[in-house]
Image 1: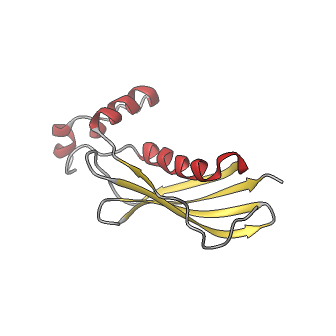
Image 2: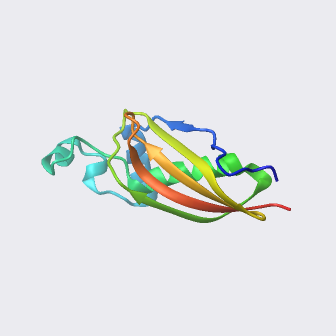
Length: 130
């Protein structure tokens, strides 16, 4: 295992679309109108439809598991939503290693909007093989 504190995970860039939000709503059962109806979303003081929080969590989960590959197992995953993100705008998933204790590795993970603001923040713990 060659993982060091401060190591950055390779950035994962997503380009979410309104179509993807509708598909996600269908698969998750998350049909709140703020995720697919522009007029409704604007009517509740949003700038337009917004990404599902759990979709953003899924993106961050992909960030971790893409980095981890078959080197280990994701054991703990936790995120908190700090801002809104919209389809048609770049969503960057980033992370770094914050602690290495034997074969347990702790990560800081976050999602950024196109201005670099962290709109989703979290942590993950992985157990490395061997």
